[in-house]
Length: 238
Image (cartoon, rainbow, N blue to C red):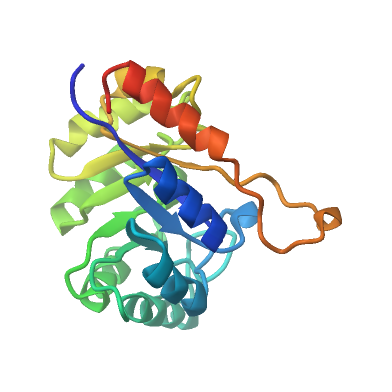
């Protein structure tokens, strides 16, 4: 295997973003409240990262933690956040997702997001892992023109979902990029890539935050980023 694997680090602070950029990550996904699976970050954080972090950015747009079936009001919040995220950064990608009443991708909302994003890259996030048919979901998203999907193959983590991830890559037929997510680390990243054929991996390097630490800024672990990048480089994948 000789293709280059792109590395994305999920960050929720300026310090985490700068650490990811310095380590050599290709992209960062910016979010808030990672302990709840991530929600839309503040405009202040995005704007600061536009100035400080010299790395390509994607922003998570998720109006609340929990499931992926949204009310009319939540859909309005989501769409307005998509539009706001492009202020000052017309290259900032969008990471979002929603399911319809049949637990398949919410086509109506996806089309609305594409309009609000004004041509920026769209990633359908791990809502796909809660869909009733991830393979059909990949086909639907590819036909809609969604550029990328973030997934663990419907399993708790990418290593466990390897078989489905491979099937998703094959079903995508190059129309949509499949990025492996879920407990990707230095010790397993090469195996995940080799078993599935993905060309992108996504992970967080934030340590769990504890109130006793006395800070609201999650502690990031640069060793996690370095271990993933080094493992890929040794395998000839960087």
